[in-house]
Length: 224
Image (cartoon, rainbow, N blue to C red):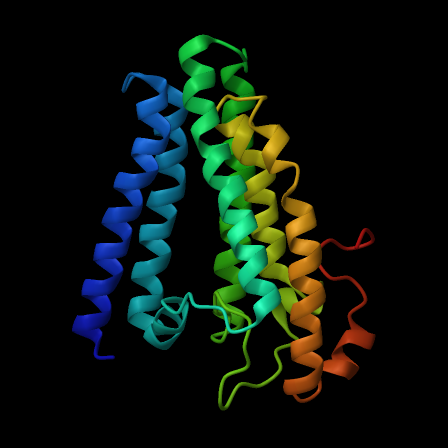
């Protein structure tokens, strides 16, 4: 894919993402005065814009691999469907929560949670810099080599660490305690995804078995 086609594809996906995500937040809220929604969108998409611009210039191949979203593993296809359903329902909750006043989350807590979301995004950026093959799907690409430096020297799946931090902080960042209920299931999704991913990596990526022995923890040091 040439850079012009890649840029067009990225722009289309980003615009659609903003529109769809915005509707999921503001339509249930019944107003555009949902401050926590604007703060969250600003944090996430401003960082995504900066990150995408950086890798478009320095590593477009990474972005092209990130465009591939079709899983090959049957187990992963089922997990993605279930997780997508949970997150889809979950992202409608904070708008209704705001409209009907179910939760009263202090603005200081909302800002703190957005800071955790930003930390998660920074970890993801660090992962992408360290590993150009950090794709959305579970597969080993031609020419892919084991990465054991940077965040991969700390845990074996640092991208999931960043994403998990974002997901667990998102309900509070959006001012909804009720959103914590569906999002509390996200660790289960990562547990089963990593279990299957490690099976694939052990079979297909040279050196991964030894790396797994050297780096003990999967997502969080001294926890798991």
